[in-house]
Length: 323
Ligand code: UDP
Image: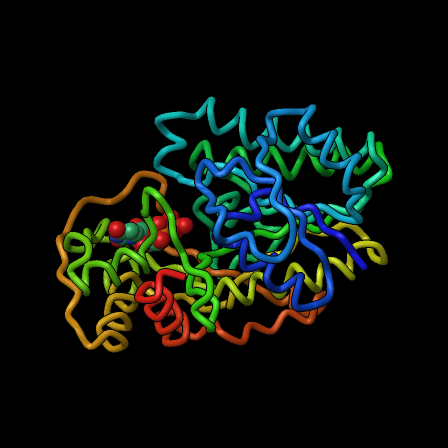
């Protein structure tokens, strides 16, 4: 049986991935400091409460469980926060990865999947964005992810490491059974905030900018269902040991505007979403959507749940159940 050390496995994408690994006969071993993760999301294997900045705790975990592969989600991931706290972002995201690579090399684990982000592209010259587009991140968060990619490539060139890097577009939705949900604290993401505004569990939704050169003046994003992201990680585990190291976009290849998301939330919930109009948010490119053809070809990546209605329906269902 394949055992996979999942750092950040108590988080949103991490917990959905653990669920998918277990459904495919693998054992996820979660390593998470529970700073922003949730112990009740860890249901498919052991939870080690530890910090990726603690090299000794990492080494102990590798020595104890001898994982066949690592999926490294643990990171700080708020663009806005990264502007006010850049050193914390670099320490956690960059030093944390270095620690993990050192523990892998020391303990003979060769396979790693790294969570990266479309933020490494910054403001793209053209859309859809292929993997070889210029990499010019415009936030400390995006730069921390680009450094991580480069560090992993250097490490693989000098050690026996295999990697898949995933550049996520906008992860959204929740497991269709309602067992897991998107639960961030603080919550900054569009879909849960729009649902909370519709149900009056949160304030009116602020729209960050209405004067972008897009279809309706609001930003456009490529929303990809979290369960489709999880499936890609399962595919990547079998891809890893047999193929060349690679960085892949995970998105749908389509964009929806902020206002289109708001309309979908209104349709699905049957309630209006109260809005306030505000200025642009720093670090937000006007339009981002992926060219996903490489992941489609190499990993048979075929999103099943990523149409906007299904994303909002599953998010809405899980928000009501608070899975
Ligand atoms: N957004 C918004 N109001 C909010 C949260 C987000 O208008 O309260 C917009 C944001 O400016 C971006 C899009 O929704 O254009 C998606 O933002 P989110 O934070 O969900 O994901 P990101 O694109 O930052 O990864």
